[in-house]
Length: 116
Image (cartoon, rainbow, N blue to C red; front, side):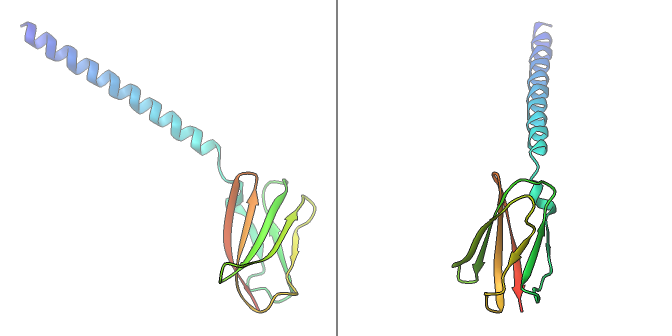
């Protein structure tokens, strides 16, 4: 009879610990969701670029660091955009494929840009 109580007690302890661990794991997931990358909803247009200007719109109004790389990885353009500036002048770049990197606070994204 004592064995049954011991097994029931151990089962209860195991279930209790697994429930606490799952609760802690779920609260960690909720914290990660709160720190969503605001750059995920960035608008970069036109692509392909034919007018010599790239327009960048994001949800937040904070300053952004903009870098443009050629396909060899060489940085060909680096600038900062403030809350009022929304366009990037690329008229002095040759036609080709480039990588646009936008950094805002601790978040960054990259997009492929084609200049014709």
